[in-house]
Image (cartoon, rainbow, N blue to C red; front, top):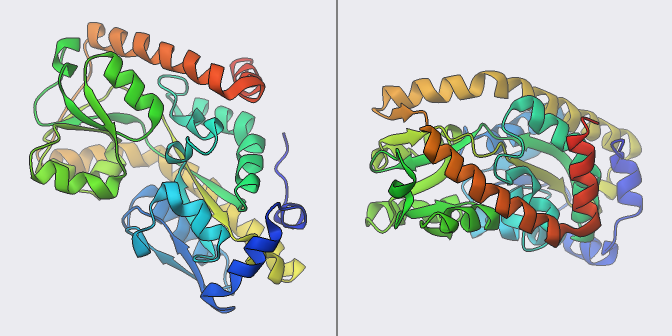
Length: 326
């Protein structure tokens, strides 16, 4: 379960020829690190910290889906050389490999300690799945706990029925639909228009994501259901990584490790800071009543079992290791 070095990974990457051909598109001196999230959100913070820690290698972070590239399309964009580094919300990659849905499985890891332990169990599988897509894992970005932003309070299971709700992955969509919500998986880039025209009532997201998109302008209620603590993944173009000297690659690996460590430290205070900002902008933050939480957990349990069936032996091994405390 140890973390494999960038040097080892780039020496054995599949699709190497395609990535090598695409890697020239940015030009040898231009390293752009792209994410669909806005400046200040956790993934953007991660790319900014990586750029600072990787100096003298020049990396320029780019936010808000540059070129229209969102999380689901980011691995291909990086493998083809459109960006040197990309960040993607893991759950958005679920159609490429079910392992990417792991961190956002409902009520599986709901504290920072649990999320860290799940990451230790899952990291080799993340690395291998990204290798198959032609990119190399650099660092992992944790998100604060997911809740529900809404136009009106959500106090009972009945309040979810008919709720036009944005989710961020397939399991979230399944869970919320099981409770009667009209759930739809959308990227954050697509949310603003739907809120403005009134065709969406609620958003499944953390306080962090909501603050980044100023969700309080339309959704003044936040219910702390503790749904999940998902992750985003930052990965590099292997052609560009191979073009670095061994010392440069080692330096980038140290920068990635330092970045990830710093993001987990930042997470310790991030949730409290988000809540303060939310309250300052008129958001009412509520704890879920027991019947609502019980209904969510029951529906979430069904979604987790469905994921296990899709993920096969790899998923079972990760969950067994995680649940054993290993």
